[in-house]
Image (cartoon, rainbow, N blue to C red):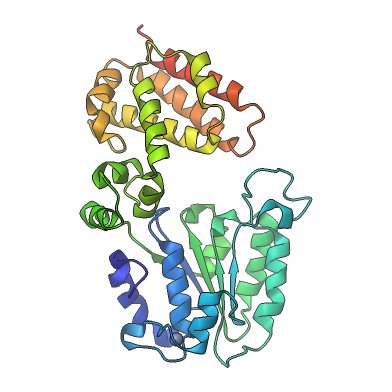
Length: 332
Ligand SMILES: [Zn+2]
């Protein structure tokens, strides 16, 4: 069984290159489609000692058991650390970690250079690869340039353009596609999600993001926010900022960006990507809106997103954004 049914074809494609497996594989694709699960399944398959047809890991051998228990001696997973574990001078913030640092990559060196415990490969899974800071990326590059025998790397990213070109060029890039909406919606329904089509659209058609977003509390928040945004002439920025200041800032900015995207997209092409249930409102607002002002608001949202990990004063940031929004749509 593959991690997710929509990547069966890609699994087959990778199976055809087993005999000339690359030292480093870069799995790229949209966020929230199951790339990391695919990568873990791939690692299990490469390490399994009783591989089954279609190169599926058996789930019963010692190697599979170790992996399932998170203590396989020939497998390392490198990802964002909680703040208390990260470099003091690199992780100044108390907020969610945003970088993979050089200390983490250096700790890999011992692992990739020792001989495998099981006479097989030693696999490093690194995600999200774009989160490596410059020092970490350069340290990794040294290893990728002269990979020790038996050391395999699987990097996962949804922003390959943010990786050092020198790292990208050392990897075999393999794209994992976003599933077709119908297939993703069927899967979501199977997971017990009501209104799967709608939640899927909100998540930009990424099924795992949609599954997170289907949480009833989040759905209620989102509904309240979009209802307010749909009525900008009665929206009170101060009150809105007060109401939403406790909500995760990145999520708020993300929702505002999606709303802005739909206004712009509707104006340019009539296409509404994220809020099909609000088509009438978006059309009504987009039609008379000034394209320059809309663009300007988009830039403000990009700036806000950049700072969303470290908002000094969330209420103030939100006040500015809601004022900017109402200004953007103000009648001329
Ligand atoms: Zn196995």
